Structures are given as structure tokens and as C-alpha cells.
Amino acid sequence: MIRRALLLTALLLAGCVSALRAQDIRDRYVVRQEEDGTIYHTLPVTLFVREESGDLTFDITYKTGRDGRATLNFTFRMGEPTPLDSVCFRSGRTTISGHVKRFYVEPSKREWVHRYSLEAAVEPFYRFFDAEAEASVTLYSGGRAYRYEARRRAWRAYAPVGFRIFEMIRCNEAE
Image 1 (cartoon, rainbow, N blue to C red):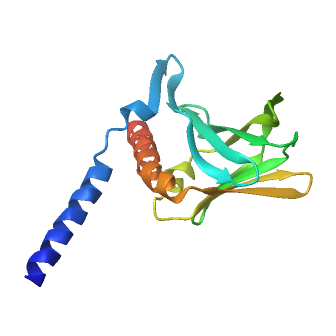
Image 2 (cartoon, rainbow, N blue to C red):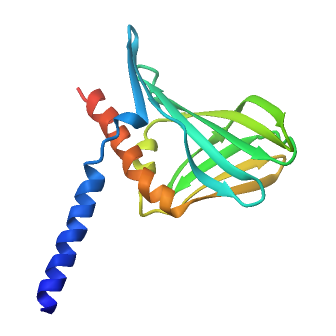
């Protein structure tokens, strides 16, 4: 009886893992062919939160033939305007960090909406989406750090999607 229960549990777990790997990701990105390369764009996703200020939403754009560089755009809200110097996206041992470019900082009701961009090498993105890793984003502004933690359930659900998208990009770039 116990063997049968263990076998059934193992089969169910295997089925869940297979379903995660086989999930349909087509509604999570767009691809567009251009004369000078292919553009891959992940649709915006909100995975990170900071209790004091709210959510952080991000999207990633990668174009082949751009010297292996990807653009990571992100939006967050704070109670006051907070000009950023740099950002660090971390997942396990993988970091994607650097100085940021500001698109805008604008008031919205009782808070300020910030939109920034980071250009980084694409290589870390291939390892970034690890569902088992702890993920966070740290924003840096004038010597102060603001940390956003991944919502564990949201990260575990989206990380396999992000991984598959970048696995697809790597496969399509292989010659």
C-alpha cells in the first residue's frame, strides 16, 4: 500500500515537472524579423515587490546582431521621486547589473512612477531564470539601496517561462 502511494506521488510529481517544461510560452513574448536582425521581446511581468513602495515590473528586449546586448526596462513606484544611479537584478549566483538610463519619473496620485532601462550582456539572462533560486532587485540612488524581493510563487511560475524564452533565443542564434 505504501509503495503504491509512493509510486503514485512520484508519477504525479514527474507529471507536474513535465507540464512546467512543456507549458505554452507564446503569449509571453513577441518576435519580429527585421533586415538587420531578429527582435525578441518579453512582455512585461511583475514578479518583485517592496512592502514600502509596491511592485516592480520589467520586460526584456534582445536584438540579434547587437554585439550580444539586451535591454532590460523596468517600472516601479515610490512615495517620492527617487532618481536611480544603478540597479542589480539577482537570481542565485547570477547578477545583471549596471548604470541605468531614466525614461521618466512622474507623479501618479499619491506616488511617483519611475521608468528606467539597463543595457547588459545577454549571457547572464540564459542563467537568470532559475525557479529554485532566490531572486531580488536592488535599486541604488545616491548611496541608498532599495531592495525588491521576488514573490516566491510568481517567480517559481515565471522562471521556467523566462528560461524557455532565452533557450529559444540561444537555439535560434546557434549556427
